[in-house]
View 1 (cartoon, rainbow, N blue to C red):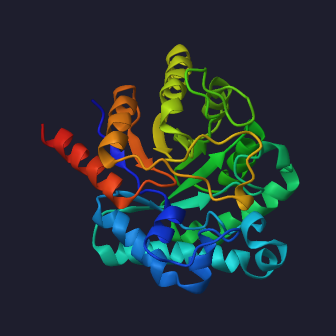
View 2 (view 1 turned 90 degrees about the vertical axis):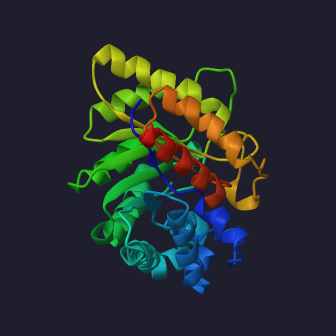
Length: 300
């Protein structure tokens, strides 16, 4: 079996769990603004649990969460601070941990209907510039459509660092995997294969829909005889519907146990996923169990 690399877990819910200031619409940016020591603590918790990659806490450094006024005055500064914090935590840890810069959905999670290309490009470019000098690799998170993916691929064309694109899926169990836009996973794979992206990830989707998505990736890369790394960081949310408004609700969690999440991860790995972590609701305890599983495979 392929070696597995362990990502961190969900930053926003982890900040809430450890007592950081946390509310809508600021989400994970609130701790960054008011109590950045909590951001350091959350990163360190995932590193201590065995994560080999931590993601910059820039997900909420967008107008959707900050509001237009705060974004205009402090958005770039906050994203830069988030990247500096991640870099500092890794450098002080003495461990061989990779810092992944984050390009979040610029105009709202799970809402491909709100997408505007020019505005999305402007926001993503600013976040890229703010973080780039501090990160080792790049990750576009929670991409809902091919249109969103094309924007981040254009922004990533500025870097020589490895980059990956993580798509969020419709929470439809026992159905062919689709992006939140309704577009096929196969079309997303074909788009990334036409770029220099190193891999396709699936994130902020319920674990039950990931298996079909990985199979769709395998079908395309197999037919084209190409290679594309597969990564997964699923959430523990209840299924999200198409009318979800991220700033008007704090989505309920299902609280998977670390063992339950590990069982999903084993299936994903058996299908070819080589990079596995978690999104919203996946805590250091889950990452610790994933890391122990990784260590066991390496020893066997």
